[in-house]
Image (cartoon, rainbow, N blue to C red; front, side):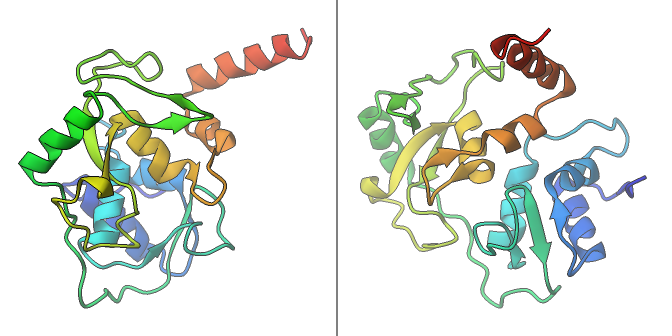
Length: 207
């Protein structure tokens, strides 16, 4: 049975998991389990953001498959508890720049996959994940590559819905431009896995 973490926040529970496993590959599933609310056992939707903050804001060198090719998508590795001396705070566009970026995007998600744009608007009901859509600013160049992006430079930002922010961070291969569908299925709830399983059986003509 995996260890249950009792720290008060999602970020601190994830931090404790990695500090307990320095030098060992940690899976996405382990992070989600560790980040659960110790009282309700509820899985947080924002675990990936808290992980990003540990890397970016607090200076932990938590490697992913983008940093270390020996790792697979959904695997992470903290080799040392030593933090980088200068961790960079995450930059956001200024309110005026964000207003201009939204206007340029016609207040729609700008994610494009196989030539098809998402186009979900703020407040829409997400047909895939459910819930109301929230539009957020996204660094076109990853923050880990260029942490000093100009918050007023409109060319450095785009609009993404929350679902595609998660997709970009966890399931999108920037080298090939392709979605890692296997990791998406692995991360889906059991109900969705069963739907996919039944669809594939029907698709391939199996009963």
